[in-house]
Amino acid sequence: MNIIFKSAIISVMLLCFAAITLNGCKSTDIASRYTSKYINSNTNKVIAQVPEAYELGYIILALTDYSQRDTNLIDTHSQYYHDVIRYFNNYKNHRAVVLLNQEISRNFKYFHSFRDGLYAFQLSHNRLSLKSDYRIDLNKFNFKRFAPLMRDFASKSNFVKFYNDHQSFYTQLTNYQQQQLTIEAAQKMVEKDYTMSFNSYKIVLSPLMNGYPGTLAINSRRFTECLIFTQTINK
Image (tube, rainbow, N blue to C red; front, top):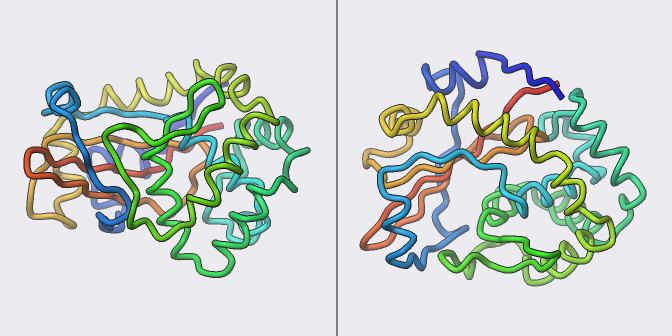
């Protein structure tokens, strides 16, 4: 799968950050419980990722009726999107899809809490759990109800196979971003939202993401981290 990066969104965002307005962080969506090991391995680093649980959430989002109405939400023009629909279309009536559609249709603010909170999860052998360094106690999205459905969706659809089959594509995306990134460039991207600098920056990607970029600050007494949710344009 070839990737076409549009400079107005990727390169210009990285090098001339003013091209895109990032919505400022809501630190209540994810809180920290950083270990010394995490702090030591992430200090002064900028890392681009297509996290497994995050991509699972975006695939469920792409199957909702709401995403068909709001064309800013999902990039429906890429080959990757067509791969997603072809593989997962039989699960568009799964309870995870239905619940997510209900929640964001009721109040779109829940989308941001959903998107942000996804980053706190990890998926291993179809087992969904919170990462050890994060908690989501104050997140407004109903993950207590949604997470078991998300896990069931992953199991029944064999999401892991799809994710593994596209691993080389995700690596292309993250490698491209990694080549552009420095700690100074990341600071420049978010300086309109924050006067502080962060110890670590994570560029969180989904090939399905079309709009609504944002950032999320996660603070502790010993370590500060900023998540940058942004889109890649690919075909």
